[in-house]
Image 1 (cartoon, rainbow, N blue to C red):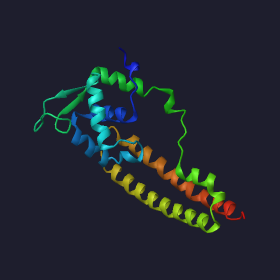
Image 2 (cartoon, rainbow, N blue to C red; image 1 turned 135 degrees about the vertical axis):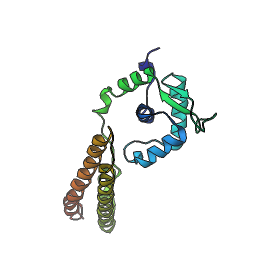
Image 3 (cartoon, rainbow, N blue to C red; image 1 turned 45 degrees about the vertical axis):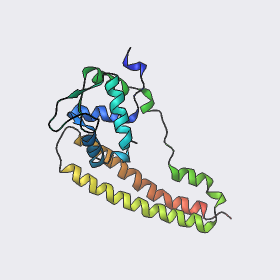
Length: 187
């Protein structure tokens, strides 16, 4: 059965990618996901890590390895990526859907529905969004500074991702002036 017979989810691909760097156990993977703030760009929950580890091991894409302090159970069992796993990761990252999907930001959904809100509510949500965006810009700038102090093959990509996030937040922040003018002038 080929790798293409099984769909690799974003959490699966994220874990395979982390295991490309070094063998890890479930607890370590969760800690690394949190440290890298993966929740900002990929939905990988703690339970999903253990589900994916079992799935990946069943398919032969990862294999258990001996580790200090390891033992039975996905939290303590360390895993490494196999050659089949490397191939599955390459195939999963070559799918066209990475370049052809649109995300549905909650704010855009709110904007589409906003004519049914009061003017006061529209003004309040816009101000809350601006405050949120300012906080996100500051948070991402702090993340960028931390990333720039690190070393490793993933650093240039991490910098690109954070710069992209900052640019998007800054662009949306500027766009909110147009949103305010447009939706607050309606009856």
